[in-house]
Image (cartoon, rainbow, N blue to C red; front, side, top):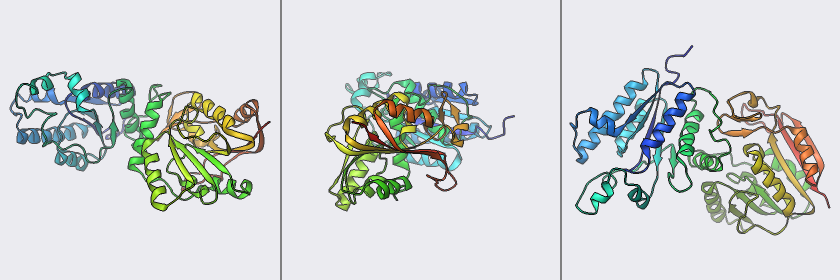
Amino acid sequence: MTVKGQHSGLIWITGYSGAGKTTIARITSENLKAKGVPTVLLDGDDLRSIFGERFGHALDDRRQLAHIYSRLCQKIAACGVTVVIATIAMFESARQENRASNERYLEVYLDVPLAVRAERDPKGLYRAATSRPTNTVGFSSDFEEPVSPDLVIKNYGEMLPAAAGSLVVAEYMELGLAKKGATEDVLHGTSLSRVQYWDSYYRKRKAPINPSSFAMFCNENYFDRHCHLLEFGCGNGRDSFYFAKTHRVTAIDESSVVIDANRRRAMEEGVLNLEFCHGEFGREIPGLPIEVDAVYGRFVIHAMPEDVESRALRESRRLLRNGGRLFLEFRTTRDPLMAKGVQLGKAERLTDHYRRFIDFNEFCARLSSLGFNLEFAIEKHGLAAYGDDDPIVGRIVATKAD
């Protein structure tokens, strides 16, 4: 039985002419419908035609029309459906009305450079602008780009429409707006989608900055001298900054947003023995050391597809000196969270983000086959409790064999 209001919500997809709004809105709508979510798709151009061209293209007319779109969406959403609308409507007042009128609201901004939009030019607006003065959308300086969109997608270059649509759906699901269905295209195996998810996460949220219990466990039990440690999947650097108090640290993350933030913090705090590098561990990253004493990864292995994990483990062994240690902590297949969310694969789930839960015994065997000797290995709850969440995790310390 569907509870009234369960699927009520608004996905407002905005951007200049040529940004790809209509295409992404259509894909988003189709994906939601495939999951059983009642969805209504609206397009600003179609609505303008439906209203009988009563509104002109002057700025005041456009602003009035943006507010009409906002109220129309709110009324439709109140009937228990998700409204997906593609519209320019670049007025902050309209977006504020959206947030005030819809308990469940996702604002998506398609950020596409002018040169790319002009090359696409689906309506011929950019060509027309070169031959006569215009106040056409895409040129007017009076439009207000979104101040704090929930999701920014650079909809050009390597970003394919299907991946962009999946990003929108994944973000909507994270907010708890969509029915928990299952389609394998959502974030599954899409490196670009994973990266943009974490970029969005670190733009909007403040993750804990105190060192994790795992970092303190490693430091207190294994680091008895100054060493060079490499952390991959460092996130906001909570453990990197902790280790850097006594050790040299190189920290890596795929999110350029969080790496830039970490670099600013290190500069502000005057931390000299801590370097942050942007990239996927296991692929070529400028500035990596030739050899390190330890490789550390907390809560990152289970956020990687299996092929990315394999590259990371091989790279760990390559960089470690003989006798160097690998420190890992991750959610396992015994974690209760595995029973929740959208099932993407045998051990892959989509809850607030993509996770691939790790079979602890199989993982230990895989490390051995890669040339690691297990020094410490345990799987249980109570190791990584945070608030109400007390996951079952694997905690491993392995030594690189000669």
